[in-house]
Image 1 (cartoon, rainbow, N blue to C red):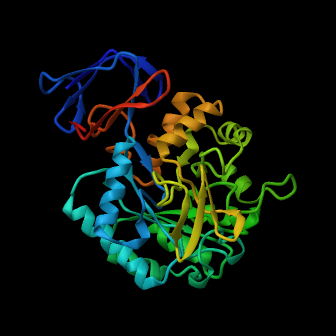
Image 2 (cartoon, rainbow, N blue to C red):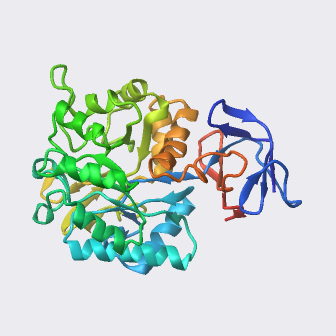
Length: 375
């Protein structure tokens, strides 16, 4: 396949006017067939990678049903999100085990849609004080043995886990899990700067939805934000739906961390792609009005977003983030975070040919190519 006439994303140079070639499922130096795609008037970018979201189209990852996960994967691919690592909620261990087993089974069946790369265990190893929309009844102190039981149920596909490091055993948990090759993220936490810095020194390399679910940054108490900034290699998630984070803070954070360390996430719920109304969420009820989702009875408590990652990319650009930086934060950086950057997240030769064409005028999706196949 030869894609011509578009501005192609390059991880180092931004956008370059050049042809892009594929040979079967991979990006190549020359085309493997005679198929051509005219990308005139388009940006050509890698397929997006979402490492933190819960569901869409009425389905929730934590329901652990085969049909629900398939519907989520199909929806995400339709939005140009080609690799997904959905997040489980704070639930009892037996339910988390079912989430892990359902993911492993889905990966074996390979029934289409976005690739479900693995699991993000957002709970249950969190702080009660910063639980947000997580269910306090099922919170659990950091427990490496429990984590490894869940990893076994997932057949090794848990790729990201969030932990509050100030909880008893938090630092030992981080050491054990990070040494196993899984990315550990600091979040839903009341950790101060020193505790968060100790967590990053113990092996954590990620911060879960920065600013949300943690103490605010203060000039005498920089907290998790300051500790993450001070630790090279730590990546920071941002929910860029236009609700969770003010545009000025989005711009500030990109400047603070640099484009190499930013990871945009959707944190989207089952209500994504659905009408306004009430929906179940982690044993609770949420209420959706427009692009805002809150816990029923607690209108001040945000419960995730109803915006896809592609929508978050557009919102970041609307906030003033350069397109090439927003694209990187939705592709290469999250691929690095869950360690699939050897095959996804950029348009380098040898990578999987998961490619999105965006119309230049409004960044709408014009065409989706997933692993060399036009969708």
